[in-house]
Length: 582
Image (cartoon, rainbow, N blue to C red; front, side, top):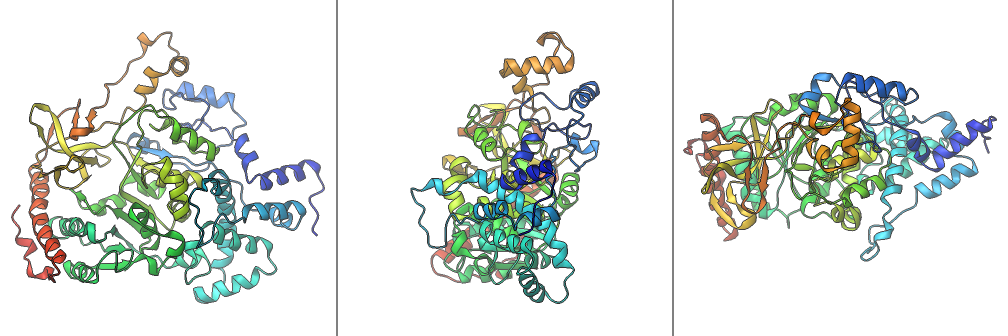
C-alpha cells in the first residue's frame, strides 16, 4: 500500500477532497466579482453589473477568493448571459496514490455504486437516484477525463487499438481503471460497441443540424427541412434521428432521404445502448446530439422555423466564446421555489448563471427553450454527457422530469452538474404572428426568438394560431413582439425587501426613489398565446414572404402525411417544391 504524504494537513486536505468528492472544495469557493463576469455568489442576490466601484469594493473584501480561469470579453455580456464555471481541481499523482489506500477504497465503493441495471424496475423507488451524489461523481469524472484523455491521444493505432491498450494499462494504473469503471457507471449507454468515450468523440467531424422525428412528427420535419433547403437555400448537412422502424416507418425514412440533398436518417439505438436509455418523447433530443457524427451540432425541433440561414448561429459570439448556445423560454408562472431549492441541493458548486436566472429569482418556472440548441462537442463534450445523463430512463422518470417540464432545463442544469460554460442569447421568448382581434397592441401566435442584434431569427410551436388550445387555423404572419430580457433584475429589485436593501447599498443609494428602473418586459396571455406590453413590430417584406411561404409547404407535407396514414407510398420528388407560391 502506498502511504499518504507525510504532512498531516496535506493528508487531511486530500482525504477530504476525494472522500467528499470536492464538497469541501465547493464550500470554500466564493465567486469572484470581475468586470467581464457575472457574480455566482448564491448567498448574495445583488446585481453583479452595477458599477466599477461595487466590483472593486467586493474584490478587496474577498482577496482570497479563487478566480475562475474561464473568461469572456466585456462586449459579449451586452448581448448574452454567460455561465462562468468554477474551476475544479485537476487530477494529480497524489490522488492516484490515494486510490490504493483505505480512504481510496472507500471512495471507489461510494462512487462506483450502481443505482440500477438494464432490467431494473425502479417504479416507486425514487430514492435509488441520488442526484447530489451524481453531481459529485460527475465532477470527479471530469478531472479524471482530462487526466486520461492525453494518455489515450498519445497511444498509437486506430481507436480500437487505443482502447485495447488503455484497458491493458488499467491493470497497473489505478486511476485509469477507476476512470473506466466510473464512466461505465455514469454513462452506461455510451459503451455500445466501444470501450471509452474517447473513440466516440474522435469520430466527430464537421457541423450540421439534427432533427428528431417519429411518425407523429413527420409532417412537421418535412416542412422544417424544406423551409431550410428550398426557402432559405441553406446547404447545411442534416441528420434526422429516430428510435427504430416502429418509431419512424421505413417508408417515411426513404421519403426523407429523397426529400432534399445531404439528408441522413439515423437510428439512435444503433449507436447508443437503448436498454439503458429506454428512449421516448423529448428524451431522444440530447442523445441524438451526442450520437450525431457532427462535431458542431445544432439541434432543431421538428416544428421550429427560421427566418435566417441557421448556419449563422455557428458564428454567434456567445456560441464561439463558450461552445454552447441556449435560448430563453417565455417568462411564465412565477413564484415557485421548488426548482431553485432542488438545484441548490444537488449542485453546491454553481457557475455565475443560476443566481441571476429567473428560476432562482422565482420570476418564471421556465428558463430554457430547447427548440434550438447548439453544442460544440469537441470543446463541450462533458457538458453533452451530463445533459444526456439527466435524460436517461431512470434519471428522467424519478427526478429530472418531475422537477422540470421535460428536457428543457436539463441542458443548462446538466452543464451546471459538471461545471462547463455556456451562453444564453439575452432575449426572452417573444411572439410572431398576427395582431389580436380585440387589441391591436397585442401580437398572438408562436414563440419567437431573436438573434444577438435583436432581429427575428426562429420560432417554435409550428404554423397554427394556438395549437395548445386546439386552434389549428394557419397564422397570417405579419407582426412580432420581443419578450424582453435585456433588463432582467427589475422583479428582484421590487419583490424582495432584503435584496432591495443590498441593491441600494451596492449602488450607494439611500432610498428606492433614487433607483431608476427600466420598463417592465411584455407579459403573456398564455391561454390565448398573445403577448402585450412591448412595441408592435412589422415583419420585413422578406420575413413575411418566408414565414407565410412555409404555410404553403406545410400544406403539401400534410397531404403526404395523410397519404402515408392510408398506407400509400409517396415520392417527394413528385412535387416541385421550388415552385410553391409564397
